Length: 304
Image 1 (cartoon, one colour):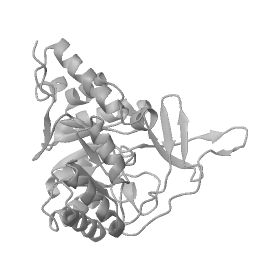
Image 2 (tube, one colour; image 1 turned 180 degrees about the horizontal axis):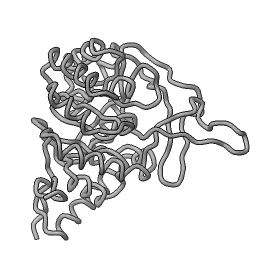
Image 3 (tube, helix red, strand yellow; image 1 turned 30 degrees about the vertical axis):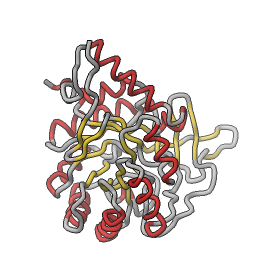
Image 4 (cartoon, one colour; image 1 turned 45 degrees about the horizontal axis):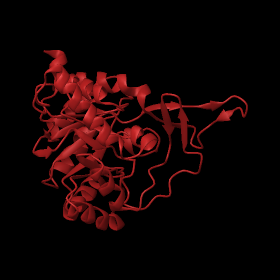
């Protein structure tokens, strides 16, 4: 039996397999992102970068539980000026690099995207969905009107592909994706973390210093699958699925729901960069056993 073709494309960007590093995990240094790529990922999404450096929230910022984790990091980052050398080094190493950015206004997103284009990023991912920082993320991306305004302003400012990352913490995530499509986005990323919190009964207080955080990991896979399914049914753009992916069959499920590629985050924090090689091997074995010769054959098959 021939080896399946696991290559895929998200718009004009082609990848050797459908596995990308999600933003927020090992995405702050060129060395770590090159390591992830050499471990089997097809590309990387950087840490979300803003206009100025941010220290983030004080500890504790992470709470792990049986099927995932909660985090409220506070978008710590070095700022756009100091991040240019990171993107340049990552691209010079041949790693497909999607630059994640966050801002408090359409103009700020556009300025950040222009800088990332200058640095050589292959695409820009608009973080319209962080659930725990006031004035950024989901507060910017929770209405179709604002999503559309941000995407259009960025589209008017840069030529590189625009990926819009959606929040699941709304009643109609597909409507947000539709607004991004109408405004000129090239792909939709779904989903960011699900808003949640943990409380210590003995201490009688929230576990995280910020109280509310974003839930990720296996616990949110079915929210992610539902979001991808709904978005791919309404929009004509490629969808990148995120949430709870830890094995080859998880990837297959996202592809069948309508995703063209996926991002892996919490599984990397738990198992290290080697999870990419393992998941890629499991996906290839699944495809062989089920008679799929290419990724394209799987995309959206659950709704046919």
